Length: 177
Image (cartoon, rainbow, N blue to C red):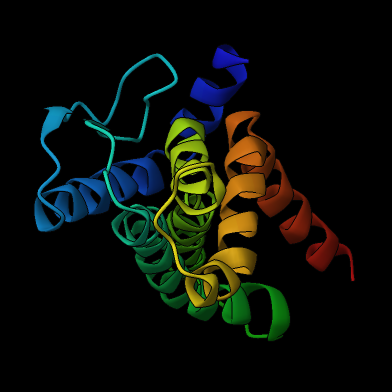
């Protein structure tokens, strides 16, 4: 599993670096000590920041949600222009423009491939919100349920490189249409 995970992070290296940056920013914001800030590693922490566990349920949720949210927004913004120009419009581009659009599309898709938290962080968040002895209110549990579930499932998909494969498959399907 680690080999597939590291390969998916190497393919989507810009997204892994930016996601690690966002995680470090939010570790600092939530006052969680950072143990390792090596974004590019050849193990399961590739593209993530090693930190102490976030103690409260709300902070844990926002720590897991916000870096992926920012990566999604940035990736969608960067990828949408080249995607529309290269794949949807029948515009004659020069070779230089086509290469530039392809690079921007790769950067945007790599950001979109790195939107989910590390599996251990997602499991910690779930335990803080829904585990025994938690301090979450009923309203908080209801409010956080769907996004927390998506992050938990997405963290398992990303651990096996499926987010990168999904993005590649989406582009191939759209090229064939």
